Length: 205
Image (cartoon, rainbow, N blue to C red; front, side, top):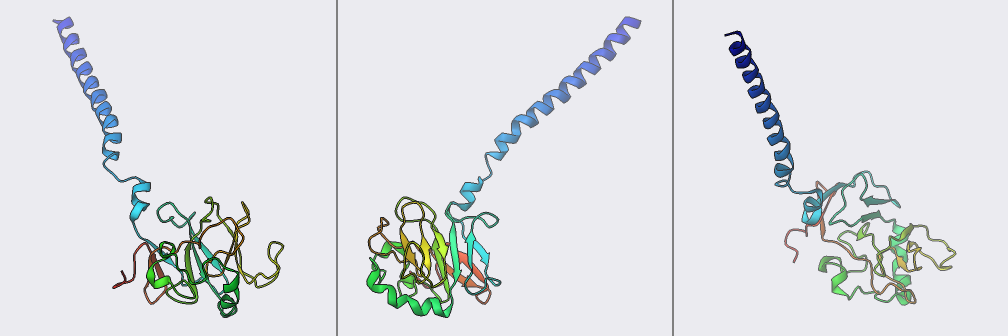
């Protein structure tokens, strides 16, 4: 009778232990299965619009959408608050450019096919990837001679293969990059304080 009592107690203990361990195993196995239902970070950013606060972006400054701010479709986006001096200098560069009128429709939406390549003259929005081999150019915003161009009027210089782009992202003649920097779809919200990247303005094609 004593042995039977011990055996019953042991049986209950083993049964309970097996149930707990088995339940934990099922839960552990279910975690990756459940996670597979959730969209990955890449899937979230593959086509989702990105909202960026530009209310504190000062004249002459550039903000890179990437790092602390999510990239759009895996690409860094540049937002530049251009000065009047930078805008006034744009027409002087036309004779030096491959596509000064932005006639390559694949490089920008129709509403950015203008002298500034933007919805609003002061705010430039572009994909920060060189159209040659995908390097990321550097921002040189000052209107002063540079070692790579003694007639420099501000813009972007790619250190990989020395392609140059002006303050509207238009490519210069005589460099490896074949086309202007790309302008993504975008519009303004919240009284122009927020930039929505990935969505065209209402009514735009």
